[in-house]
Length: 296
Length: 108
Image (tube, rainbow over all chains, first blue to last red; front, side, top):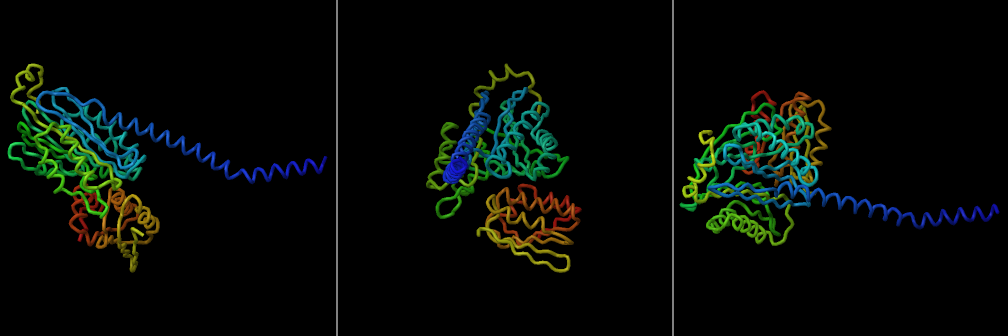
């Protein structure tokens, strides 16, 4: 009995030893699958929030596109239709990549939406967002660069402010030239507290385009390690300037893909396009529905 | 190794020379030097051999700036090329540095 019990114990021990690696492997597989499922759910959440409702308005169109380098990313863009008929655009880049950056991107989105409710201009929006996020970002040793702009279809004026982001490109639809928006600079969100963000403004005419983007486009690399760079972006924009806004966005993506030839993206790629169209033709019908036309 | 750091210390001055790519995959290497900084009066970060920096890399540089206030030392940047200068300038890094160094830009 003693012998039999001892042998049983020994057999069971040997069996455990033999099957131990496969047990670990099974558990690892379950954890991997759970993680994978959760990352995909997180990606769905991020993509749904990013690709939310695009506001429709008279006098122009907006479009946003984001291609994360990993399953989820830290780039951000958003639109917010203001009560005075203006449309607020924001684009940003959270420090880092992947899940940590994505979590902070969601935090940034909440701050933007909340600030847009209570502020009258892009500079004020960035100030409010910096105040809201500074402590958290400082604690997390992170930062966010943001560019925020208010487009007024009635006056054609785009007012903007910058928190450490690269300047968007202005594409003159008539002259067919591309240049950066007149420079306005400011410190990234999370850099220093109590920041006041200066504002710049530009008058947009019919067929003009403003191209907001993150640096992942210019830094996209091909197999030789060369970067896509500004020259190629300008060429892609000018070659497709007359197309519909969706097509222009897609053409830029195609141009980047053609350049990189399947080399995996290192950084998130995000762009927002604003195209002015038939502002004068539609202004009368637009005026009739707007009451707060004198606000800047 | 995509990133290597050369450290030289003498008379309270520490020089960190960055060689290679400072990005999300290598930033932890430079980050390790943050913990090691003791009894420093001046920290010089040399970017002469920096090949590429991304936002995570910039984040580590900002950590050094924050630490300079905690541990009361000055920071100087040297050997910054045009592209890196533009990145730091756009992000507002020099202004953060100035704010933490009593208005001195300390960039050469």
